[in-house]
Length: 394
Image (cartoon, rainbow, N blue to C red; front, side, top):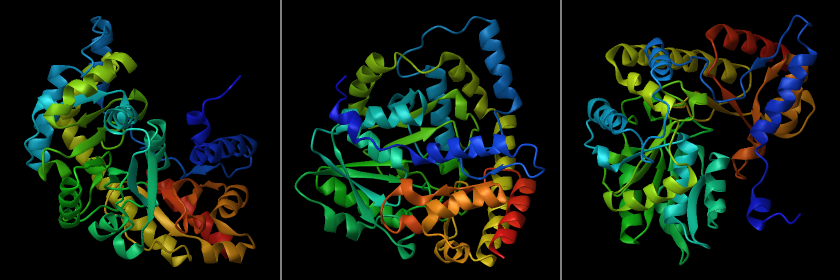
């Protein structure tokens, strides 16, 4: 059977390959007394809060399980609009919001609507691998631009201008970012968007971790800059609904019909039960619980990253959001007699029973010596993991 060139271009998602190896190893050591601690997957250990679960149960009992509009329930779009106003002081009309089958569907729809074959999309290196594959799946070319700790691992306006070429269509950024947990300074983002607009390009921003911002400087949506920004968001991270596969996108008003046509044909609609459940995310009781959890994520970050630095796993930039630590394991790997983050990750799994993610997925700019820790785990688990890693590195 002939496989399409498009499919052949998509690299394996090594995060998931490592996760499979970790799961297999966890089964093998299950009775050893030191079960595997998973710090490799970016999934909150919290699940949907009570009101959300109850809303899903009601929807099923009452038979509200049939198709919705392709753009989502009007009531949910209004709730999302209200959240932007309440949380960020941003005026985002519900008519510009399209509810999607997760942020992944939103990114696919955005790329299919905006990227032509051969178009180039500028992205920072390191960055989340699936984002560049969405560009590739639309027959575009993701151009990875190396970034530094001094740039918070984010693109600058100067680098966007330097790398803009005749085939460049726009930029795809993430703030806060996976794997680094760092955000773009709002002033720099305005400069980037202003330049992109001057070229007739698109500014596409992955904001799925925006709700999990910890510093006032960075916790702002790009939608406050201009109504031509395309923003991707999700119920997975801040709202703790990973497996519900529900997200949304905010697009310029003129783009809504095209996105809706694509959604009708590719997805019919997002999960109806998940949409009815998500309405309860915005109740005051639920928001209070999400904010309590956000404070817990911050406390984990504040404890765990100094521990990494103390044991010889430096984190060059303190993350201002999400739940990741991007740590340099170059020296630690040499102490273990291995080379690079891939071997270090498997040594940590085998000898300390701690699963982490090597940097291989996230680009080419020195990612081979970095590992990504996920702190979306309990404080007790993080403390045990730190103790095991300290023992390993001693």
